[in-house]
Length: 149
Ligand code: DQA
Image (cartoon, rainbow, N blue to C red):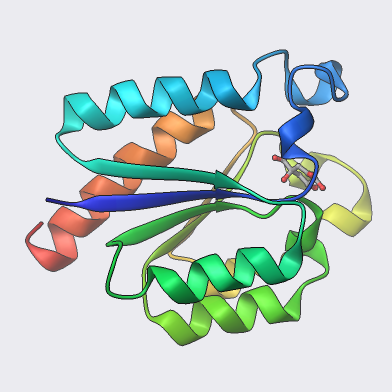
């Protein structure tokens, strides 16, 4: 059975109350519940994690090798700062989709650069909480295309 890891970085635990004009009002537990419903309908296994700590995110990416078929990563602000996260992704040889609720390209200049993008198979941003569902569809289609999953 196809299995996906959705990994959420710093401050995403605050969704719902964090800058709702930018990130919407849906909480992370609500997003996870929606993703689990979708996983069931797609017939796939899904693990959903959040951490504020760069090292924990790196540990999760390293541990995903051989366990998950793909990773959907909203790395939060580490997107723009973490070469270590980029190296972890490059090391595990798993397809990674970079995800953001907001359109990072329409925001401050410092959000325009992503360390994750060059090692991701693609990026989904700007669609709010719906981006999680879009990312799952994109990953399932990608796996079907490349791996016969
Ligand atoms: C974010 C965008 C990042 O620039 C920001 O630091 C976040 C959230 C998003 O989902 O839109 O924490 O990843």
